Amino acid sequence: MPRLLTGNRLETGDVLWWSGSGWSLHLKDAVDVDADGEALLAQLVPQERISDLALIDADVTPSGWRPRSTRERVRAVGPSVRPDLALPSLPVEAI
Amino acid sequence: MYRYDEYDQAIVDARVAEFRDQVARRLNNEISEDAFKPLRLMNGLYLQLHAYMLRVAIPYGTLDSRQMRMLAYIARRYDRGYGHFTTRQNIQYNWIKLAEAPDLLAELATVEMHAFQTSGNCIRNISSDQFAAAAADEIADPRPYAELLRQWSTLHPEFSFLPRKFKIAVTGSNIDRAAIQLHDIGLQLVRGETGEIGLKVLVGGGMGRTPMLAPVIREYLPVADFLSYMQAVLRVYNRHGRRDNIYKARIKILVNDLGAEEFARQVEEEWALVKPLGLDPPASELARIAAHFQPPALAADAPVDIDLSDPAFAKWVAVNTHPHKVPGHAIVTISLKAPGEIPGDASAAQMDLIADLAERYAQDEIRVTHAQNLVLPHVRRADLFALWQALAGAGLATANLDHASDIIACPGLDYCTLANARSIPIAQKLAVMLAPQESDLGELKIKVSGCINGCGHHHAGHIGILGVDRRGDENYQLLLGGSGAEDASLAKILGAGFDENGIVAAVATVVDVYKTLRTGPEERFLDTYRRVGPAPFKEAVYG
Image (cartoon, rainbow over all chains, first blue to last red; front, side):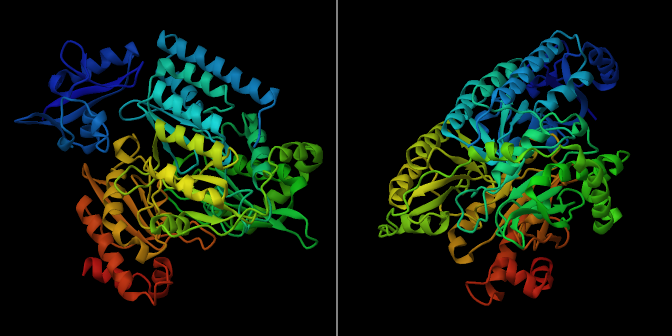
């Protein structure tokens, strides 16, 4: 199953997704870190710049990544009750 | 209301400077996240799902217009234009940037507010009756005692690292609007045999994973001695409360394990040692604090009769106002629960308006309720119509206090990193569904939590809903029969859980059963449930 690397930016708390070469605000930019996940964590955790780093399970769908858990889908979209604050990369209905 | 003295202000200013330094060191990577996290939590700053959340303390839920305007300004300047009033009479901001938090706190300090002790295993914000100093049923204003507790517990070195968080509520009335039986310590002002004021002390209540109602451990405590007695209660807890298991660390577990009688005996034993040490303030200090809470000079000859010919206004007056102790006046509750809106949320514009209206019509006082509404405590009845019109223009005149659409809901999985399921969408759907019939239903308190921690007070709901995680999906348990009032009881789970649509349908079924079983319109849902028990509801919901 694909695994995505996510965390929150230290300065702002923004939800971030690992894009292969850096961090993106948008789930659509995420890459499957596959077997490299643990190594990436081992590299990034000591840098202390991204909080709550975690590897999460996701499915591939025709419209892009779909995190397995509701929690991660909410993180990806924003609060489902404030669609005006949701990120543009994913519709609230995706939760 | 209370105004900071030089010591209060110095404490808050010093804390802001200290946190500014801590944030700078964290941003420079001079301290690790592991070291920094407890420091930011001590200043009310959580990292939630989408951003940092700041919880600002509102002592005993009392604000003036100057402070409310600052809360509105902070919503605009540092957040995304709104705030969320909580079940501990606080306000939370959901989109705070760490780098800006020190500036925010410095601005907050200019209106005598702060965010410390809104997290961590310390004595949290003291909560109280939102109708204090206004309720006709009140023995005395509880806020001077709450303020004394606030000062005593602020940065108290002995009680900054308790086994677990600690919540105290104080009320001055037999009508319990502060849920004192569901607090770690509940205090109720009572009159002694000779008429002097004292405190009834309840210890060991709470919601969360192991809900319990607090037993009374002392029927009467002279107010002059109450701080030393609080010290004794906290010392017994600090000494014997469990630190090996976070789920058994609250004082309710200790009181339950020891038994209320033995716990009370240990407190009395400790108190005998503590009391002679002179911890209790002199009467002059209590008098100094009490002087800040002098009731406003209200004209006792203000007109009582008002024009109620507008049916919408008449309904609002009937539902959202309460009798004031001074004739010709009323206590107004501003509902933050318009059906379909987010319970407890207020925009910056709404906060500014409420500040203006408090200044103009309510002696410059505003209260936050644990049910996530706001109160203007001192309003002339003759001003109610103008006030109602102004509120209506801002979507703040919903007449639903304590009715089915006046739902408590925690932030849930839309914001909270602890949550298992979303609370707000459930509350929104229920409110929209039930609002058309809520006048007929009468008092019906629905409370929704997104996890077992129970910030949405589901155990105290006439109808409670608890969101849980079922293999990665949101699932909702239905509970019936709770109350956080003077007739407190703990709601019980009715049966298996539901998905989002299923829980809404289940509540609809429960309400339908109530309508067929009640003896008449005067019998509340809770009374019907207590009379008939869960069986007919269970039969209807599960077949």
